[in-house]
Length: 303
Image: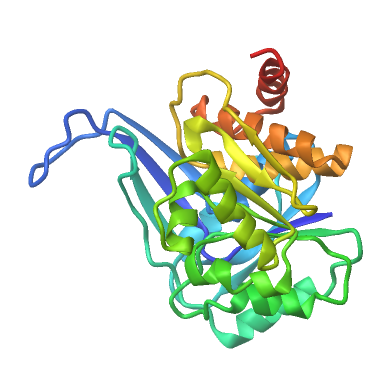
């Protein structure tokens, strides 16, 4: 079984506003609402790929109940911990202005609730896989992912981490199976601007040498780079297509990698499938579907 953990789920409110102007009343042309959060997005795409998984994490208030309702309605399995105070956040994303969004803070997580999550993870068995994805609330230490990994270190549970900054750097000593920084995050972590394929590969190799078995770097329209557990490097251009949705594309990459690796036990194929999955997500208004991913994966060998 695959388990994903999202500390700070959200209702993603994605709006299209034509000719947005600051300081004025702007009206939406189109609106969409998704139950979101990086781990949840991975669960959603895994579900689309026919991979059984369970979404874990923390929810609170009426928005938390709506997040869970929407996921169950879409056929996902959940096992959330309901916090007694606060409400799960609402994130506003302006689809017409690339990269423009307002993300909510989210509810505080108390020690008792963190302990409940640890106890749930204690039940994982050898052969299960865990995905720790996304940001954590200000009330939670940036060592929390590392601490959970160390707690599970005696079990044969591969752990995937998709996080940023100190939250990501702290897990390297616990040797995650896979991390997935994007180019901006990799530049931020290494403290230098990365532009060329050689510079990006060198930076990814540094994280590999610090403990990450596999380092998958997402490069948007440029595709991606992988350093695998044996230090082999791969690069792949993204298939051609019109990007219409950047939300969840990186999470689709993580899901695609997991799906293909568990099926084929081949890092190169997992890498290529991750690129196809991320592209399928970017080319659709929703989340990547298996038929679209398979089609793009086949096309990649011909381009």
